[in-house]
Image (cartoon, rainbow, N blue to C red; front, top):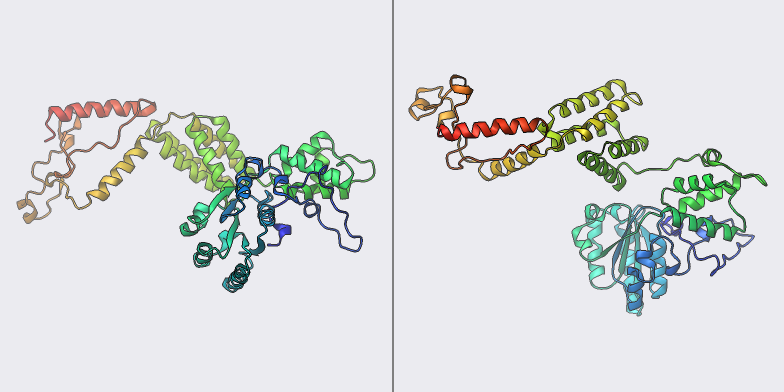
Length: 449
């Protein structure tokens, strides 16, 4: 993508570097483009990378760069940081987008870099949206990274661990760009006001709303500021309600296919597991407000009922299934209340992962001992041959035994008796634990025969 749409929106200090006036004959440039920093140290909101002790600052001090992957949301400075890095070490800067480029484009860039290198100059190749390249295209970077033809800087909004080849990641350092917080967004607005020579016509609450609407995106906050200036009449000051009407925007909480989605469902799940109904409701509502599919949330609640509550409260699974069905029947927004009810029920229910743990242990044992036959005494013998082989011999029908319990062993003889399920002392599982301990005593008394 062009640098206009890259990540770099952090602005140079208004006091230290005045913004050059626009040429009257040139079309107006967006505020975010005009306020790009001139030095890496001027980038706002990424002190862990560009501050005095930041990773990139230390790298620059050595005078050479290694290949990197910049991971972070839009509007956090990825493109600008790459461009400034190249400028500060005097590398040629090449920029391509994985959205618009193919193998032929890559070959041209690599050839130019080789020619440049033969003339004594290094190339920094910035690849925007690098995760959109397929595996073969990503592999094409490996030779030119290894022989030093290019220093690769890839930018991605997706988790590199899932979207980039392991071979590429092994040759590049992943650096995380954080979303802007309210303080760094406010700093951008102050610098924008200094550059424009006027304050934003917003009251205090409206200014806070504008920062929230930017959702951690530096480019967005400057674009919103421009919209406010365009809409304001002389002397007019907007309140919180008016500014939302003007910009016609609500803060995007997350992209349902990206990391924000997984972060919030993880937060919901852990809040339920941690028996915090208030936090669980908060994350449920955030996801619903962001447009998440409520039936997806219903399915996740069903999973939580089995994984984290289990038999400590057998009703949890019933209630979650009922909530999912209720939403399916009522739809939005009426059915969302059933999901909220199930969420609170799960968060306040006694917790046990005993069934979950037992299932995993039993699955491992099944995979490792899948060829073992059950003991013959529990096998049916529908033919004379099978009876002659001992099938069914010695089986005791439990309903005919004292306490309806024979105490026989049902595991394969070679495997021996195993213990997978160990109920906890909470909820209904406390009852199950007492019951199982009694059976264990009876089994020992009756010899497991």
